[in-house]
Amino acid sequence: MTDAPDPDDCPFPPCPRCETPVVSVTSSGPHTHTASPCGCWLSLAAVQALRG
Ligand SMILES: [Zn+2]
Image (cartoon, rainbow, N blue to C red; front, side, top):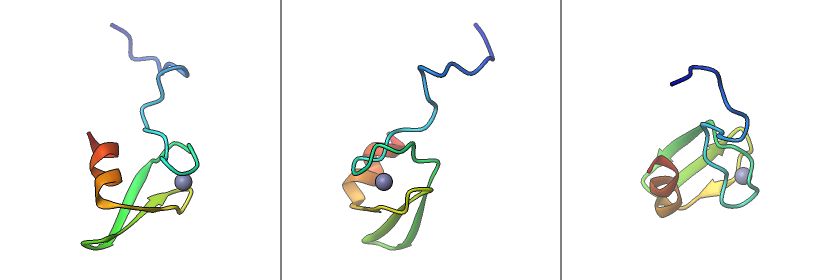
């Protein structure tokens, strides 16, 4: 057990469009989801996959 962050085990999932780690997802509608910080548009399925 360790609480040190492991750079090879990024806590944020990669964006399916640009592979930038997605820190958060902004949802402005049932079919409007935007990844942050990269700003890519995501489908609902992509959002669900990112959130596990
Ligand atoms: Zn992206």
